Image 1 (spheres, rainbow, N blue to C red):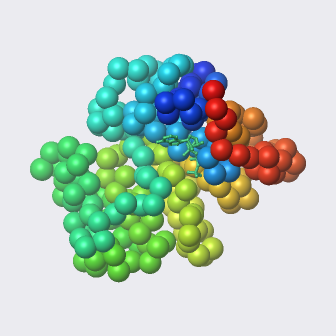
Image 2: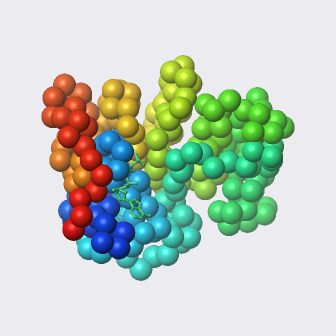
Length: 243
Ligand code: ATP
């Protein structure tokens, strides 16, 4: 079943084109990569899906429902959850407090918060080991795991993760990627934004490559991994074209 589908989506920032003509889908149990160089439009796609920017054209459907009139906060409650680039955790709060705050932010009823926290902690050993630690004292990789765990507090039906490998040591990247594989295997599909194509192809089933706001390549990751056009899309990258 298709969980997320975008058809013909265009987003502009005033006169600047963010993305145009984007067709994309994510099915159940999949990890799908959204690739492209700086400024290619990856974050814009996520923002459009989350409802943080309003498309000028096209349709975004989530589990068969057109999202056009669904506000961002309602999308989160329906299970459309984004882990933002840069993690945005609260460094002066403990790991547990970060998760509790997320539960509050997601509007989870007080009575259910504890069970939700326990279920997330259970699934994330890296979090379990550091519950009482200040989040700011965690390594970059651990903070990324916390950011993902925070997203999982919402029990998402689709998790969108924006550049989780950014600035992490290779070993930590592997842990974070293993976690995404686990999350997808347990039933939550993942839309993964990455700049590191080699890494992304390893864990995704399909990928879309954006260049200057357009999808220039799409297909199975195994095939795209050997496709020279992927590198060309990066090398030929630039910022958004003016309208
Ligand atoms: P990065 O990897 O650097 O995050 P990206 O692929 O996510 O890049 P976007 O951030 O989606 O790219 O940007 C797509 C285009 O839209 C870029 O040209 C960018 O300059 C432009 N853009 C993004 N946000 C805004 C904004 N708030 N105002 C104006 N233009 C914007």
